[in-house]
Length: 149
Length: 245
Image 1 (cartoon, rainbow over the protein chains, first blue to last red):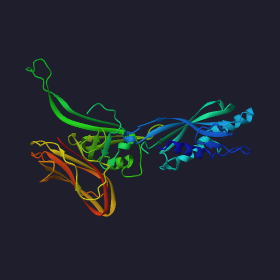
Image 2: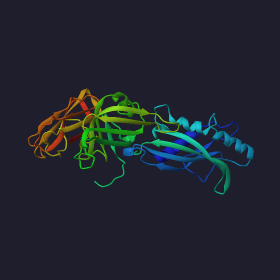
Image 3: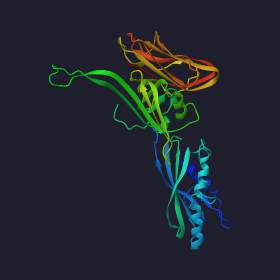
Image 4: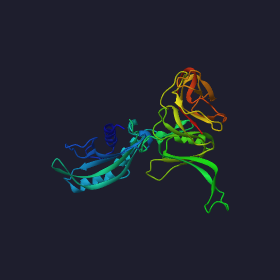
């Protein structure tokens, strides 16, 4: 599995989330950045488990993604973040990213992987990036795909 | 062969290469112990060998949508017999291979939410479990008639049989592409005067066949797989294993 391409594809999927009226579009990057533009979603670190089958048939990657919003207004920032982290609805990052699973039987992430699953939200707290504090949380995305490509 | 970590076990179930969709393969072979203890056994239990049996169990990640995928192949094979071949470390020519004529006796699929969809299967051997060698690698496409690498399996005494398994994994071409495999023997590695010992039925689709000789002695000690291919722009992927049991 091409990890860099998969990170980019997850960011592309997240970009399709519907933001509340009057809110800036969600900036999405497949990599962690020092130049945060709130609200910002990025695909950060990951863990890879090789050899889930014989013959390099399957690897599993658990990507830790983050979404950051401005903390200039406590209420609006938390409301926006809660919507993005919700399990359903047009503003749900889980729903937006899981659209990239494709139809049943189809490959995920445009053919880069076999399947994906937004597993959980964790670490809802303040984050500091390049000296600025943001409110944010992490989303864990599990992706499975061919090990030898 | 030294100790090894199982990373590239190859599993061929009739016409399906399940290697990339499996993460556990187990073989077992056993002989029943029949109690023959008597007054002259010297105070020790005495046993005789009864019936021998073998099983192959495997599990992994479920896939479907092609005759070579585990779900399609398992439903097609359930209740039927065909060759099952397991090679502990890849399937290059000469690699150790265990194979039998297996009855596909069980297939299980499904799991709990969040699982990578699993499968599990079992085949019971209806012929002896043969410890042999891979005679043709699964990844080498054949487009014309030819012969494989010679293997020195040894001469076969009376009462033992030469076993051969062929797994046709993919078929391409037009005008009914057909591969007809056979097993040849000779007394020298160059095969100056090959003798055909076994001939498989012509195969036009994915599938597997297993054959064995009649138990007569064979003085030749070198063996190889050979094949005749017909059709228009034919191309076949197949794996083969040979052994004596």
